[in-house]
Length: 419
Image 1 (cartoon, helix red, strand yellow):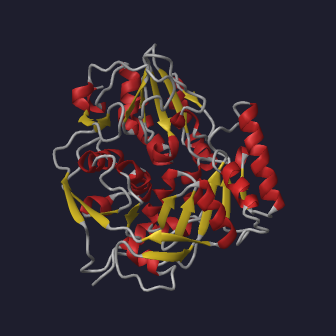
Image 2 (image 1 turned 180 degrees about the horizontal axis):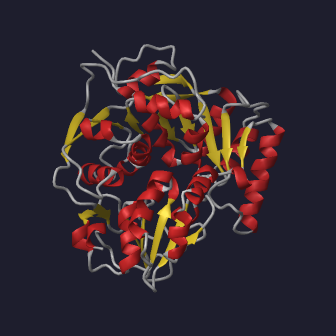
């Protein structure tokens, strides 16, 4: 019997024969990741277990992206502690300040993750790297501390749900809509400790950036990982990021799936995930009466250059509504620079946007865009739980960059075609 993508990648990193879902295996890791919120806990556990060194100083990444630039004394102290830990143990991939970007956009851009890798991170959206054909998953900080020390961890081999996407995409329907449609089908717990494996002609036509948008939100369906085959597009992306030696990876013929979920996108509209769960998905046309106060374009889900171009195409020559705060946060310094040189910042600034630094910022209710009581935001982020972006009585609606941009112009959730 053939292997799924998850089984195939895990098999490359364990000395045990992978026989199928439910098996417990010890697995060598390619990279261990933590950020300014989770790394302090991992560092504390690392010291408590008596570890004297990290398994490989080049294969631990500590990215200061959530509350930075430091929003207050507490966040500054967290970053100071992680910086000192990185220096003490010689960790090479410690990143903050002007070199830093949102971790799940930065690592692929730097070529630090790629096809066939096993990546564990103390952040639930580590599953983003599945877009490159990596088995990548989030873990708790204590497990991350152990992985930093040992270079290995254990997994229960997950069952896989295959998601086959076919049909023809309508204008303004893209990767964000595809993953929201998927989550609407699975529910937020339907893929718990399962791998989501994406395929079909629509998926094959997506850019690598679009695939990262989808893999990023596999966790919103409960997924252990979100996986795409590593094809020629993947290898070209990784080569441009400075990697070499990567190989094509695809599931085997005859791989056994727990379920095959088929989605035909022909005739589908852009969609919006309504409060307070990512599976509360409706067509954008049904949301026209929802007044918004903030529009956020950015995050590890939709802060890449393609996303900014998509938003700028909608905003060009238009102004944000007077009562809407439009916030644009490019996900990395390289994306920031590219957007500036392409003239996208002129479009955003002419539209009345605030263009900020690469940061997670408002996505987790951290800073740079917090909602007050009763306010609503449309955002290209990945979660809309109660109180996620601020006050417990605020609301977050998840959408694509095009819908977020159009909604900023009208002050209501809007289909871009209606501008």
